[in-house]
Amino acid sequence: MINHHPDDNLLTEYASGSLANALGIIVCAHLQNCPHCRQRVEHLNKLGAAILKQSATEPVKAETFDQLMARIRSQSPVADVDSAAKVQQTHVSYEKDPMLKRLPKVIAKLLPSDGKLKWQRASGSLKIARLRAGQQQYEISFQRISCGGKVVEHDHRGLEVTLVLHGSFSDEDGIYSEGDFLVRTPGEVHRPTATQNQDCLCISVVEAPVKVTGLFGKFLNPFLSFHPA
Amino acid sequence: MISIPTIGPDKHQRDDTWSCLLERVGQSRDEQAFAQLFAHFAPLIKGFCLGNLNSNFPADSADEVVQEVMFKVWQKSPGYDSTKAAASTWIYTVMRNCRIDLMRRHKRTATDNGGIEIDDIWDEADDDQAFVYLQQASNEALIDKSFTQLPPEQRQVLTQVYMQGKTHQQISDETGLPLGTVKSRVRIGLKKMQTLIAGSEKITEKLKGNFL
Image (cartoon, rainbow over all chains, first blue to last red; front, top):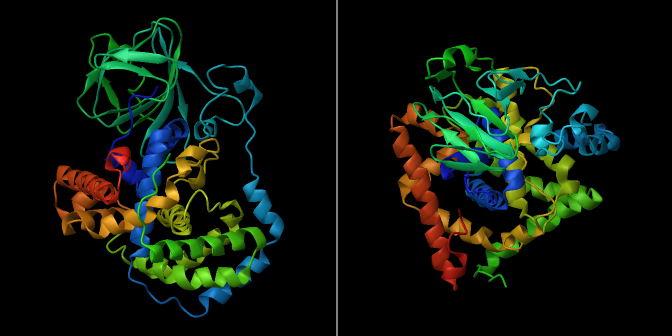
């Protein structure tokens, strides 16, 4: 049961196409598991269509249609099929990992195609792997907390959006399970703990470096170096 | 049992016409049908793009966008299913994705996208969720109507969000309105539409909360 969803503002930015790619990825991954939000977005798309239908019409140059048809005819019909049937093969090494083998498809596309996902141990119970998504604004990473593990208390200087992909974790405010979507705004302090029975995998998008608030955290903070990719 | 909202017959009829044409383009590559769709939607798409003032999107490329969008409409139309979306909504999403793509290209950002495409990110479709689609054809007309009934400031901010493709923060920066005001206008506008839609329904209770 998904209890935490993106808010109306974020979904509106998604449906109108203004959301940064990195945040769009997380919203899309949430939608793939959340019929409720998919329906909300469908309504917001209809609002987009309403605005399109009510736009003032602007005459299009007479030759545009002929140019377009010439372009369409110059495309081999095979090209259509190719692009439609383009399926990315997931590297076999991910199939062996129960956490990685059934990811939302948009997330699966972020996995390095050579099968070499680089996990770095950030602290005793937390491992992170940075992901590339062709942008410089945000850092995207997987975070894996081993069962019962605690993450060093940290606060956020920038926006952090997290989606739980597997297992669950809790912090001061509640318990978050698979599909839950969380937004942490600058200044919030929290200390996530994975539940006892299984490891927890999350994907997060961070706008600016996260600062560790605990005394020893400084040496353990995985986010001290900020690497958007 | 899903209640069927009251719909003005004209509006519904018109949307049906476009959806049929789009299916003919997709299923039988009907150029005549495509020409009719182009004649109707191309001027709207251009108008929508030119509503895009002050944006980082170059205004003189509206014709380029129109051609690109309609090219994608042709290419993607075999995947169009009129039971899942009205033609206008489907074309809106194609246009939105095209625009995101073009804006990124104009800004010349990141070259290595790690194999992820705009259509992967802006893709809310899922195959096994047929039940969601049951209500879809029904409330297009209600959404159109409720939008026109919004107070001007809410209508305006939603138009800016959609037409200019800007984040709430960008709108705040440009208009000088506090971010919180932009956010609340969007939220209140959406809620208001929901109320207007519910008010148009015979069975208000059943559909409460349906818009968002």
